[in-house]
Length: 149
Image 1 (cartoon, rainbow, N blue to C red):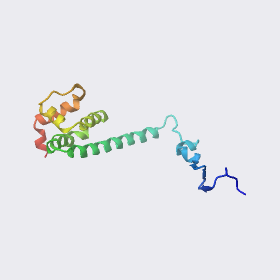
Image 2 (image 1 turned 135 degrees about the horizontal axis):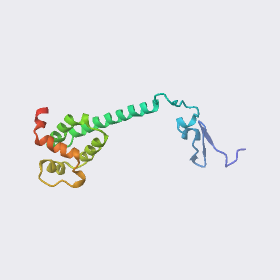
Image 3 (image 1 turned 180 degrees about the vertical axis):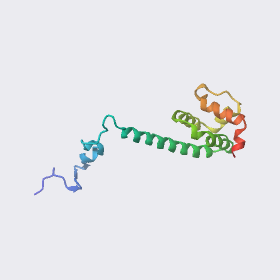
């Protein structure tokens, strides 16, 4: 005869007892922590880990650039699509990670505020008066936005 405290069902190593599903502890350990004898770079050789991290950083920056370019051309108002989109097409490939972060912060702002700042209707708050914003304003005041399209 079965006791009441015994589990009723068993699915793939996880037991159901008292209505709670006990988790498999081996699955909670990340794969790289399970193996102790991982290859390590030797002194004097190229560090393969640094090369992999650099490639991942470059891929991450490229993904951020693609997302920003899409967001720049899909702002919500046609005027801001032209203002930010043309600037992104011309300048985004030469930007580093810090400049991309500044442009992402500008992209999070509402269209009317950003447009008023670029045109010069209102004063720009100090937190948004970044080098990237000044480059955007100079880009449009120089008329380079018309030459790209």
